[in-house]
Image (tube, rainbow, N blue to C red; front, side, top):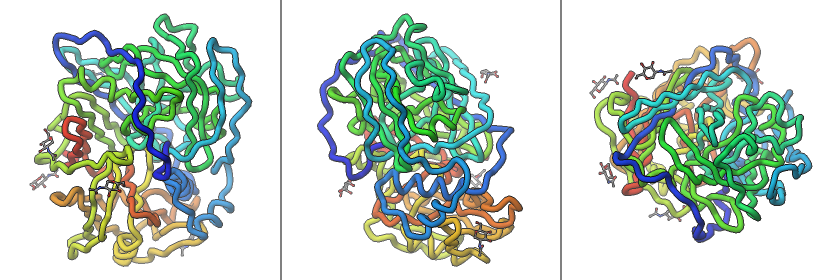
Amino acid sequence: MPSLLRTLLLLALVTFALAAPKPEKRSFKVVRVPNPNFKRTAGAGTRALVKAHRKYGVALPPGLVDAMNAAQGPTIDTATAEAVDGKAKGQGKAAASASNSASAPGSTGSTSGSINSTGAGSGKVTATPEQGDVEFLSPVIIGGQTMNMDFDSGSSDLWVFNTQLAAASQAGHTNFDVAKSTTFKMLTGSTFTISYGDGSGAAGNVGTDTVNIGGATVTSQAIELATAVSASFVQDTQSNGLVGLAFSKLNTVKPAQQKTFFDNAKDTLAMPVFTADLRKAAVGAYEFGAIDSTKFNGSLSWAAVNTTSGFWQFSSQKFQVGTGTAMNVAGGQAIADTGTTLMLVNAAVVNAYYSQVTGAVNNQTVGGVTFPCNSQLPDLSVDVGGNYMAVVRGDDINFAPVDQAGTTCFGGVQAIASNLQIYGDIMFKSQFVAFNNGNNSIGMAPHQS
Ligand SMILES: *[C@@H]1O[C@H](CO)[C@@H](O)[C@H](O)[C@H]1NC(C)=O
Ligand SMILES: *[C@@H]1O[C@H](CO)[C@@H](O)[C@H](O)[C@H]1NC(C)=O
Ligand SMILES: *[C@@H]1O[C@H](CO)[C@@H](O)[C@H](O)[C@H]1NC(C)=O
Ligand SMILES: *[C@@H]1O[C@H](CO)[C@@H](O)[C@H](O)[C@H]1NC(C)=O
Ligand SMILES: *[C@@H]1O[C@H](CO)[C@@H](O)[C@H](O)[C@H]1NC(C)=O
C-alpha cells in the first residue's frame, strides 16, 4: 500500500468498462465470518504494530525494533520475492520494491466465507476474521473463480494469487487461473508493484476480468496477477490477495493507473457507498451500494473526508477516556483503514488512556503497551470530523495475549509518531462505518448489539 510519502500521481486515463447498466441499481454485501479454529499467538500484537508503522513509513521506536528482532517464528519478512516465472501470456516485469501497505499477513486457520446474493437490487457476501481478528477475509468471484480476499480501505490495488506463481508459493492457496476464465484479457505491458510496510510485497502483470462481489459486477476490472509475492503472503494461506478500497489515485499499476473495484462499480450502485460491519471474532459484512440501518444504533454521524492523500482521512482532534473530560489532539487527522489490525494514535492519547489501566506498561519486550489480561479497560472515544465521538469499547482494546500463559495482553491501541492516526480494525469492531463517495464523507454509529 502506498505510503504517505508516496508522490501522488495524477489519475491517468485508463480504459475500463462497466457492466451494462441494469434497470435497477444494486447493492451487494460481503459477510465476514469468524474463524472457529483461531488460536491466539504470542507476537501477533507486535507484528501488527510493526506492520502498521512500516505501512505508513513511520520509523519504528527502538523498543519495537528489539521486540521484533526477538520475535520467534514466521513473523516479519524481509522482502523475499521469488523469481518471476513468466508462463502466462503477456506477462509484464515484476520488480518487488515499493513503499508500504496494508492487511496483516501470517494468518492461519479456516475460512468459511460464502456468497449470498439476495437479488432484486441488493446482494450480500460473507467474510471471516482470521487468527484473532488479525485480518478479515471475504469471498470475491473473479472470472468465475471464487477467491477469499482481504478488503483494505487503506490501499487501492486488487491483486491475486494465481497460477503464474512458483508452485511453492501457490501451495495451500486458491490460485486464479487465467486459462480457466473465458472473460480474462491481458493488459499487455501493464505491471504493478506494491510493497507493504513490513517488507512484504507483491508484483506482477495485469489483466482485466469480471469481478463479482456479492452480486454486483464490474466486467472489466483490473486484476493484478502476482508473479512474485513475499513470504508472509505465502504463509497466510487463508488470504489469496487484497481488494483495495482507498481512492484510485493510490493504485500502483503502470503505465496506466487503474481504478478500484468500488470506483468502477459505484455508478451502478443504488448509492455510491460501501459499509464495513466488522465484529470481534464474529460474522460481519461488507456491503456495497446500501446502508443497512439494522446494523447500527441510532443514525450515522457524517464527517468530511480529505482525499488529498488518497485515504479515507478525516480530522480527529479530541479524545476521551471512559467518562473523563475530553482532551485535545491539536491538528489531529486519522484514516479509517480496514487493512490495519490495530488502532494507532497520538502518544498523548496512549498515555492518557493507559494511565487508567492498572498494570499497563510500555513493554520493551514486545514493543508496545501491555497490561494484565484481566485488567478492566475503559472505553476510548475519538473525535470523527468534529461532530461525533466514536466510542471504542474497552473490551475491544484487549487485543491478544503476549505469552502462552495468557496473563499479559497486548493493547489494541498503540502509539504512532505521526500526525496521521490509523484507525484500524480495533475501531471497526465497535463502530459501523460507511464510506461515501457521493460527497466524500465517512459515516459512523455504534454497532447494534
Ligand atoms: C442467504 O440469504 C438468505 C435470505 O436472507 C438467508 O435465508 C440465507 O441463510 C443466506 N445464506 C447464507 C449462506 O448466508
Ligand atoms: C453526505 O452524505 C450523507 C448521506 O447522504 C449525508 O447524510 C451527509 O449530510 C452528507 N454531507 C456530509 C458533509 O457528510
Ligand atoms: C488534507 O490532507 C492533506 C494531506 O494529509 C493535508 O496536507 C491537508 O492539510 C488536509 N486538508 C485539510 C483541510 O485538513
Ligand atoms: C512484557 O511482555 C512479556 C511478554 O513478552 C511478558 O512476559 C511480561 O510479563 C511483560 N511485562 C510486564 C511488566 O507486563
Ligand atoms: C442505542 O442508543 C440508545 C440511545 O442513545 C441507548 O440508550 C442504547 O443503550 C443503545 N443501544 C445499544 C445496543 O447500543
